[in-house]
Image 1 (cartoon, rainbow over the protein chains, first blue to last red):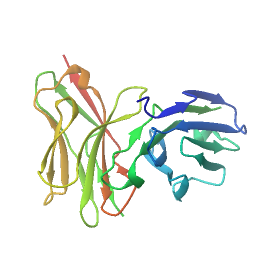
Image 2 (image 1 turned 180 degrees about the vertical axis):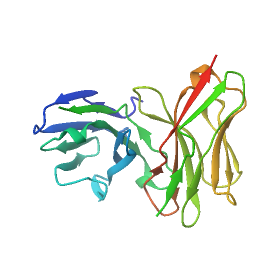
Image 3 (image 1 turned 90 degrees about the vertical axis):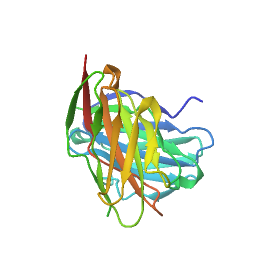
Image 4 (image 1 turned 180 degrees about the horizontal axis):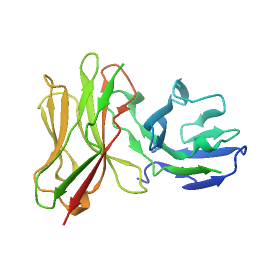
Length: 116
Length: 113
């Protein structure tokens, strides 16, 4: 199994530009989670999907952030326009069986974003 | 709301010695508890979880954790540390009926040769 795949692994962009992060969950998993990791705030859940439907987006910081899951094998997290305070490592994770407590989340390698 | 506390930012231990990384939690109802490890420039890797049953849970790489309901703790332990265990360790809680994890801030474990 290839595990959770994220791209790009590194992204450097200028303030005001649009940034799109991509995630391919583990095949057969039907829950997908987007997290952000910073030194100051630790690991924060941004949004999670179950069966391609957004269930909880309360962690999305503001309207500049949006996430989609058009099918079971692909999700995007978009930041438009980007700001320097968005610089962080963004992780995608997936789990099976509707994200019930018994199911373990498996994380991708992350995208390291730097907004200048 | 649920929360997780990892009271130590860093734990230092010599190779071959036992290690403990502490975690306490606050949650309404019964918790499901998890430990993850993060190596530099990598994603989080699952180590072990407590769902129900035996309070001592064994996981990957020789790690184990003990669930203590009265103390609301879930400390991570290993009898003999390796230099390669040096990494960032996260404790996480998921209350029964919830689908999302709440993570602690993480504890950096440094194992010296």
